[in-house]
Image (cartoon, rainbow, N blue to C red; front, side):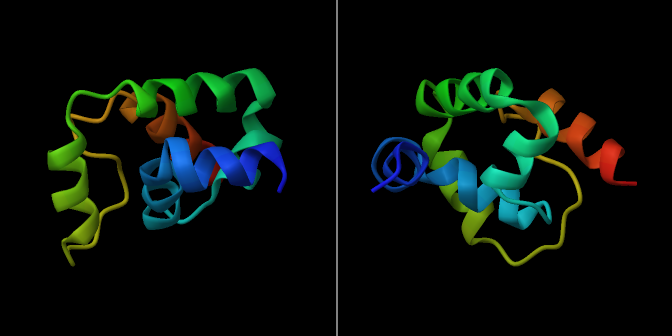
Length: 85
């Protein structure tokens, strides 16, 4: 299993779900932002203190084009969203 798949599945599974909700995925994010930025985003997700709020947000059905305010990667993902525009 490639390291990126291991990380998504076992260490920070919310980051991939978050990015998919924001119309991208971790591999595409890495291609556009670089490996160091992807690792920093994964680390921020893993160390997040708002995991319960994140799970609630991810389970909700509202449509959103930006990460929630509590997300430690909000600035990263909002910049990524602007790049796609």
